[in-house]
Image 1 (spheres, rainbow, N blue to C red):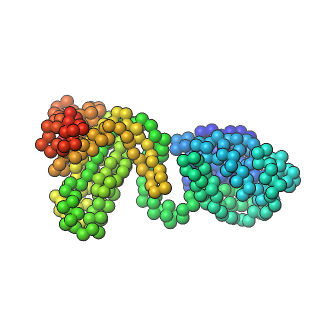
Image 2 (cartoon, rainbow, N blue to C red):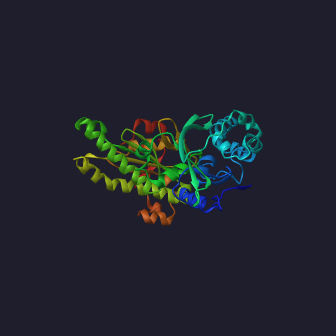
Image 3 (cartoon, helix red, strand yellow):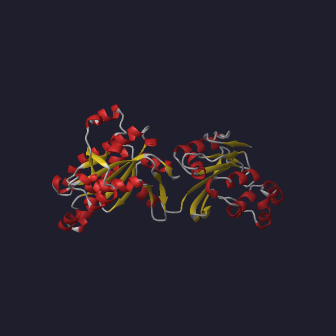
Amino acid sequence: MFLVGDETCPLPDDPVLAATARALNDAGNWAEIVDRDWRCVYMTDDARRIYGGPLELAPYPIGAFAFGSERVRVSMEWRAGLFPLEIQRRSFATYGPWVLADTPGGGDELRELVDPRLGDLVDELSPVALPPAVSFVFDGLYAPSWANVKFFTTLIRLRDDAGQVAGTVVMTKPAVGMAAVARITAVGDLRHFERMDQVAKPGRRPAAVLFADLESSTPLARRLSTASYFALVRRLARAADQSVIDAGGLVGSHAGDGVVAFFLAENNSSESAAARACIAAVRTLRSAIADVASRSDLQPGDVVLRFGLHWGANLYVGQIATGGRTEVTALGDQVNEAARIEACATGGRALASKDLIERLEPGEALALGLEPGRLTYTPLADLSSATEKARRDAPAIAVCDV
């Protein structure tokens, strides 16, 4: 037995198992392969990311018996306590009849192979031959914050050219049907999913913050039918999200016809690049508004967005996952301040704070056609469009049009 760390598992020596492992891993499946003796020979990268973390591959004991002491110990040490002893025992009780049928020495041999904490379960097993394929629902992941989460597991027998058992594939997926998974994820952007994974663990992350909102939305909602207004909001949200994603940002929450986005320094190589990405996203979205209006049988002047851009030096950014949705959010004073800036940007203006503009290095500023050294700023409180909340919460924040 040897422990695989952050590297991809080596392909098994058996050609059938190796070909299967390569195909499963290339397709991003959540899967594991055991040989004919139920020894661990391969786990896909995506499976190990589930157990190890968004940016980490969980350790995996090549050659260990699937329910032996080494495998049980390693899996109990995986991230977030996903496999406590309770789950290990439940898993062995489920797989045990098939494992027993594949063990030449029967219960006596199996008792010697399994972790001692599972040994008492052997006497309760009766051997059952594993069919070519079988699926079942298993409460297989457990964490205090998740409770028992149901997953579909499919076992597929692998045979060599002579028809002899070479091993077994253990594939896992969320219990929700693939039609539902496809509706949720098929139109998603893989780049954005990867960025969301990177903030699955919350932490301090410098970032540019973007708030955008539809101006005069109430009169527009009254003018249009409810269905037409909903279609407009949906088109705006899609255009906004794509602009953010293409610029290297993270889409935050959608509240009605408002959009929030974050451009992390760690995703954009530097603070300057993150600030540039934020401004670039605004300009891209602005250029898309005419098409959004046309598809909604409106004039461009009917669809006006306010933009507020700010810099958050110490934002706490992370992912919130619940039974209803998963989204990226950030906490910090600068988030509230960005909202105040946006509310002041009437008439379709894009107001950026001095803190954000002065993050721009000369090359990034030049690419945007800006000259930070020549810009002048106005405190929010001095704007004719300043809201009561802006005067109260962020009167001294200096902004300019971008």
